[in-house]
Amino acid sequence: MRLLEHEAKTLLQASTVPIPQGDIITKDTSTYSIHTPIVLKSQVPVGGRGKLGGVVIVESPDFLKNAIDKLFSLDIKGYKPTTLLAEERLSIAHEHYLSLLINRNTSDIRLIAHTDGGVEVENNSTQDFLNVSINKWAIKDRAEQLASYLGYDLEIIHPLLENIYAAFIKNDATLLEINPLIYTVNGDLVCGDCKMELDDAASFRHPDWDFEDKPSDTNFVSLDPLGSIATIANGAGLAMATVDAVAARGMKPANFLDIGGGANTASVLKAFQRIMEFPHIDAIVINIFAGITRCDEVAKAIIEAKKQIDSLPPLFIRLAGTNFEEAVALLAEEDIATMASLDECLTAAKEITHA
Ligand code: GDP
Ligand code: MN
Image 1 (cartoon, rainbow, N blue to C red):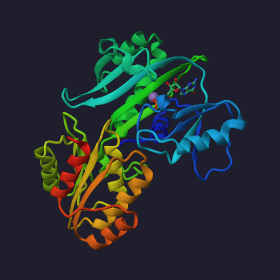
Image 2 (image 1 turned 90 degrees about the vertical axis):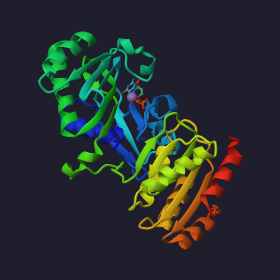
Image 3 (image 1 turned 120 degrees about the horizontal axis):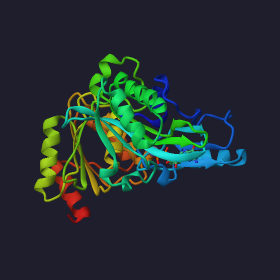
């Protein structure tokens, strides 16, 4: 499960990793205890917000209300925020990149760093990164390496790395990425942004986990090479058959997705959001044969997705089984058509994609 920035920062703070002072703003917030200049940040579960207008510096209280309204209505890669993070504006001397992640191929945790972080970090060439294995016995050694690589004293880097490593382990993270790690003009190192992914399989030992982006029952695999026809189905068998049927018609499937037996509106809606992270989708084929799953729950998610996601590609929907009539009635109210068979869906999809 992926956390929002403010959720990740709360976990960092609990491990005494320095973060900027901040406040959460929701749509219901009417008075602000924050003092400009501040940075307003859209809390969406995707990166690259800065380049898309999702990070805004507000200099004066006169501009605050307007900036907040704008951010709430700004769609970032298919997501609109339900919360904003308002933080003290830091005066940046330098931005670094620092991350820990589990590498399943090498069965270890990697410590990856770059002297130049920030929104252009992808432009750095791979060889320039510090990329070393880390474990609890090697923290001091790695801190020495990191300190000399970034050009700081070990006294600053060692506790920082210890705390970041502790946050990673304690929270069963698979990824903890700090970009930028900000070196301020006052000489402090502060985590400017944090992306964190937690291991869903470890949720049983974290009864306290209660994040906006909850562990889901959805089973999602993006396909390589990535196609342009997304699929949503229920049951692993039907989901695989749907992917195969798309391919058999000469179209390129983008993903396998089994929404599972207990799928509800929220989890199906999340499936749509995952699909919208793909760079280019021509159509979404939805193939549900409902037993435990209820067609009306899927229908509600489809309606919600249409409302929430501006750039939703055309949907081709085949529903059958439990609460089918209720679902069709709900969809008809919104002028959303369903089709009698998967075959019909694929024919229609093929027509509009000219694939
Ligand atoms: P991302 O684009 O989604 O990764 O969002 P970030 O939170 O990383 O912010 C993007 C960029 O905004 C950072 O790399 C900084 O250059 C800038 N930024 C963020 N916070 C501050 C701040 O407190 N002060 C200044 N001057 N710039 C900031
Ligand atoms: Mn960032």
